[in-house]
Length: 307
Image (cartoon, rainbow, N blue to C red; front, side, top):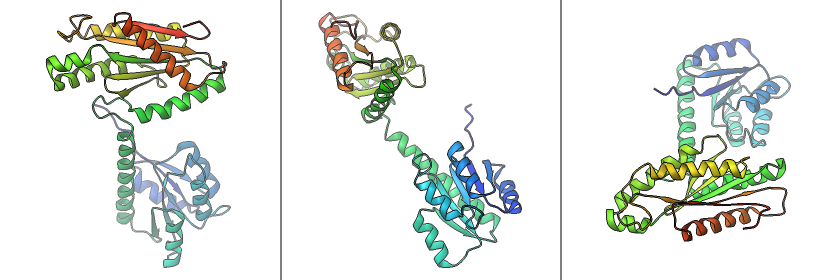
C-alpha cells in the first residue's frame, strides 16, 4: 500500500497560545509548521512550500497583509492558499484580505469546528487543482507526459545544459509498421500495444530528470539530461530489445514476427553554437535512417562527429 504524505499547513501567529491551539487542532491530520512573526512565515513558506498558510494579520515586523503581498510577488510561493485568522473582524478588513488574494478570512476568537472545516475545504481544493494540473500534462492513452509537457521540460533542460556545460541526449521512438498492425488486429489492439511500449519506455527512464513522452501518434520522445552518448545509446538499445521481448505478434510486419521499434537519437555538447531545434532535428534524421536501414534498430549521432 502506498502511503500518501500529509498536506502541510503553516501557522503564522505571534500569539503562542493561538499557535498551540491551532497546532493541536490540525496535527492529527496534517503536517504542521509554526512561525511566530511575518519574517519567519516568509522564510518557512519559501523553504517548505506548504499547501496552506493560516496567517494572523496583526504581527510584529511584517503584518499579515505585508506577508501575503510578498508571497504573491514570489514565483515559488505565489500559488500557496492563505487563510487570514485575525482579530480585525470588520467587513472592510475581511474584504481587504480577500482582494489581496487570500482564500478565506476567519475572525478571532475562532471556532475550532469552523477552522477544521475551512482548512479541509481549501486543502481539498488544492488537491483538485494539482490533479487538474497533472492531468493537463499527461497523455490520456499512454499515461506518459504529453507533448506540451515535453516541450516545457525540453526548454528548461536545454537552458540548464547550456548553463552547466553538461551533455543532453534525446531520442525519438517509432513503432515499426504500426498502420499495418492496426489493419490486422484493429485499433483497440493497437492502443494496447502502444500502451505496452509506453510502459517499457517509461521504465527505462530511471532517473528523476529523465522523461518519456508521447509526441504524436505512435511516436515517443525520450529526454536524458546530463547523459553522454554511449550511456544514452545503451539505454535505448536495452529499450528496443525489451520491446521485442514483449512478444506482441505482428503478422503485418515485414521486419519481424513480433512488434518492434526504430529509434533515432542524438547527443549534443551544449558548448557548441546549436539550438534546441537542431538537436531534435538530428534525432529525427537518425530515426529516418533507422527506418531506412531496415527498422528494429537504433541510429545515433554525437556532435562534433559527422552525420
